[in-house]
Image (cartoon, rainbow, N blue to C red; front, side, top):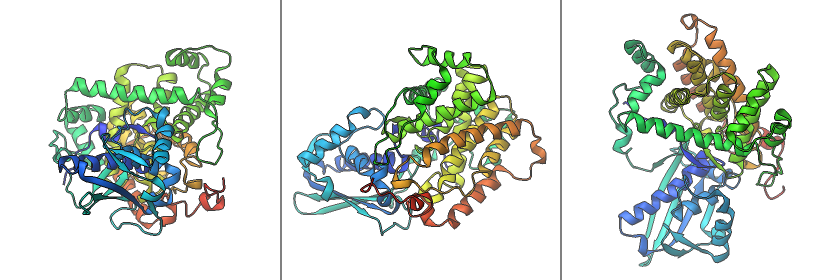
Length: 474
């Protein structure tokens, strides 16, 4: 069955540090409140408990899941909520032991008692499960269960996908083979095919405006990350590095805003080491913001949010083209590659390890860069395949359950691999390639299913056990 995914499903504006453990549960809390309103039950609710299962329970504290569900139940919007007051809001709920459900109905709520982490239980459908249990004034109970399936996507238990997910598109695409078919039949590039599909939801002008807004948020996360110092929250005492690297690279050149900063970067030339250092700096900056509960764009997840902005900023800074049209082309192409991975495999680290996050983001960025540098449709798909092929089997083993080590550095590595993959594809003849993008997606999914659960965002294996720092010990 064909499944329609928009560019704005793949790129969501939200709050770090995790799309599946923060943004997804936040949205689930809001959706539960919406259900209560629609059923005219909101004002009858006496109390609410939240139960977190599996990966959400094991790394929920480090990923801010407990914070996210409280803000979601409070009716706050992750797109617009002021990230600077998150700590203040959460401290207030804990101190008063009261929560304003949906933003207008106050109930008793003690986070220590009413958020339960069931680390030994996992839901059969997906390891990222959470349930909301509401007690009504008349003593009756109501329960709803949601799954955060990666990239900020959520699914409600026993509920069919809504009709918007089945929008009829002029060019239906489930696989890379489908995408190539439409490109060859129409002669259009990947981004042109995607733009035509987006008109099924909105006008072309609205799509372009929305994409440029997505890029503005990405740019802001890069710029803020490159100009913010300090220690990341959570207890590991990880020191921010992007600002120091930014200052070493840019020297004494003054700047007051992103435009002046970008111009200063360009003046430094295109030496290989200089360029590579900047790519690393861009990626580090975004994910340091993400780790600090800052505003970022899922691309396709929060844990991998730095790869695509870093590669796009690289293109703008060092490939002599800052046209808005190229930004739109880049993000349209990247989104379609990400949607094919979601349909054919997963973008959830709790299901597939970090290959599902950094690997997918690297493939998305590689394809997008390849097209913007003049690659053919086949070369674009080849670039995505190369990038993922060399991320296969990548585990998710965050130390202390935090999206910091090794997550932040992995974004730099994913960005560098994306650039290398794009260049390899541009210098290759895809007709002679032995591995297709669909084949590597199938392989990724098989690898994900074979991978031990301890390497799937549980902190039960890998680096998380070699450096066993619990948050209480840090």
